[in-house]
Length: 274
Ligand code: SNW
Image (cartoon, rainbow, N blue to C red; front, side):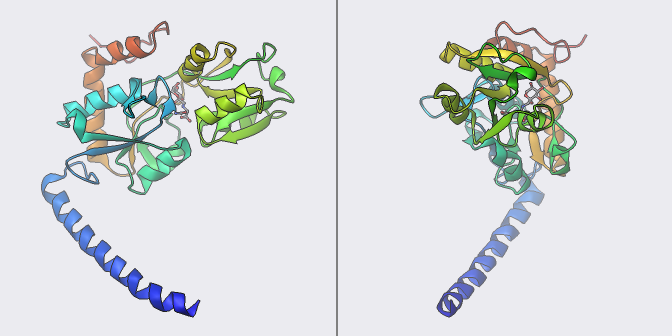
């Protein structure tokens, strides 16, 4: 222990000094050419998910794609950031908001619903999507809360589904997963009877696994998805909102909605206004 201390302490001091110098540099860049207070002023770093298709997912070649990804990329372009200046990184859902709060990412984008509770730790852009929380299951008798009694239900940690299930599916055994793919693997090998996730993602899994069906849809219109930024980064938030409104007004939002959510009813509120 003593040995550890005597070695470690100077290293810690050195590290702190380096951090202080680095911060000094970042501070001066900020005042000049970093109006959005980005981690690196030449790029926007975005935390997202690899398995929330068609909202956000990684392709076979390792690139990120989906409705949220293309919408954000379009908004960033309007702010002057080219495609290769938007850097997406996949993370577990539960880590996304904390990572924005502690400065690992500038933004998080992954169908993240806006709630007062979440607004205690991060800021949200205006909403860009509102839909349902859905049950995905191979069991025909799971059609409501009653049918979930005594069953094992998967939820991804930190999601609104987890909160909703804890409150409303009281006689159901909740099984927490780090991501959708591991939950759906659990569904396919019988570890859980159902998985609870966003509607479009649930629907997408039914096309990949025909035995699975979407049997329950719970409206989540009071928690529209928004882009998440660090609390107090108002310059970035305002620029994102401006780009978002422009994307809605010129029909970009509608084009992306039709591309990624074919067959889903078109909501009025994000369409061009006269
Ligand atoms: O609240 C909904 C919203 O209405 C829309 O349907 C998109 O999804 C939500 O934002 C909820 N999304 C979950 C959440 O925010 C799960 C997100 C995810 O799995 N990527 O916790």
